[in-house]
Length: 322
Image (cartoon, rainbow, N blue to C red; front, side):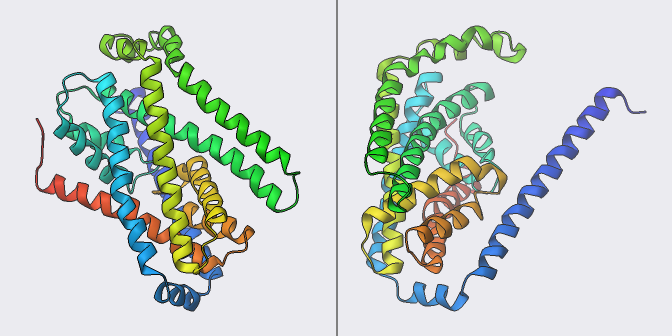
């Protein structure tokens, strides 16, 4: 005989399954729509005629991308969890990349990181991961707002001084965040009202100990990480178009990263969202949809598929720190 509690569990499980199915359907639908709209022969031709030296350069930047992710994760992990070994931090990064690659909103990344840090609690790993994700997200949103202003200027909708003002304000906000991010400790009284968090004294203390030095390091590394991703995208656009319009391609990369940050949760591993945003925004800047599609596929292979494959191989090999 079912109890009310059992009904809640069943309903929650059903809801999660329906949500997952919906996100898979949206991802597949977006990809199918793009393929239907695109010229497949043009995609193949663009791939065959690509500048492979630029693709190789973008691939090499993957190591810088991962290094910056490691530094960022190390800073936040050590802030929340004391006594971690470098091996644990590195393995947890790759396990997280593998776990998050094909899960909605990259939720599997939290679970993946936890697998390599078994001597810490799930709430500690989750808190550190949230801090790790917070700073790049803010940088991307501010960059995206500036990008919208510059895109509007290129289309003749804004006067030239408006995107300059908006970009300047965004830069100022970055400095404000650097100086005030530690004020997140004001939420501690609210966290103490949550039953499963109020007993986590070590987690609450780590949040309370956030300072300007921590936020400054996280902002600097996050800016470098975001720029590395955008520059990789710009290089791929250039590789498939044979036009080195780097300024416009960087702007397109900013808008793609902004779009997938805001809308990535509606699909699996941003499938469809990333490709659709690439086609749309590069199109606004005069680029071919086939070039945009190829660039988005390669950015996925370089920054998501390959690192997640490495993480999966490490998992299969049973690599553990503790």
